[in-house]
Length: 322
Image (tube, rainbow, N blue to C red):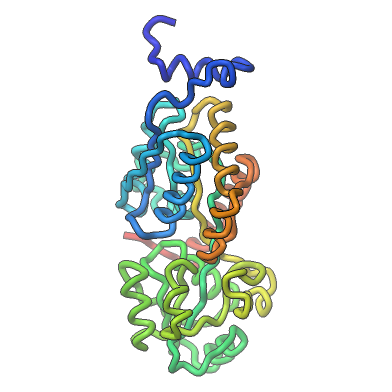
């Protein structure tokens, strides 16, 4: 055993039954949550919320670090290279299942095989909105207007190749309507232009859109989850008009690949307990998000399904991300 670090000894010891409870050694140093996106977004909000609860419940010292850039690849790369000792956790968004297609030749590692899934922190639908001056109040009216005016409606969905853009593209492909994408560098300016009437339709995360929608600056007409969202019960789902349609975004936690299974299980228990805490669940629901907590196997099945789905959307739409 000579030459192994304290962390290495503990990680190796996890493979033997009873070592965790007998030693009570994990963690023996601060833990890093690497958030792959800037402060203020859904990943940051949920990551920090759950980090605080894990510290409260477990007494673990969690240090949150934002490592944004390159659509999440900078933070992802940092965690992919981290030691396999359970001390570095990635908090990432649904870009995790999109980038394997849109950035296939630009990624220095294979995303699906570089990480172990822990669980989703939460799953959030897109909110479909219109500028208030547009005489469209629901999906049926949107489809009728678009079919009567092919190519004349435009929409924003943030930056090209992001979750909202692919969700909007899936909607366009599913319904067969001809609407034009106006790209922006982020949700903020896109939604402000929608409120001002410079674009007509919006597809963006509930977290980003909810404030303007509740304030009346933009009009919510649908959510992209299969069922209605508890934060906007009066707003129907797209699936009520387009059966089976679903295009959610999510925030989730990952470990570097080849981290010992016992550490993966320990982290899943910590995240699931934090998410299930009543105050955390309430806050997640207030954000228009459905709480996560799925098992690693259940989450892995979601990842595989979404990677295949988004690859199909990108291929059919001919989306290219520079």
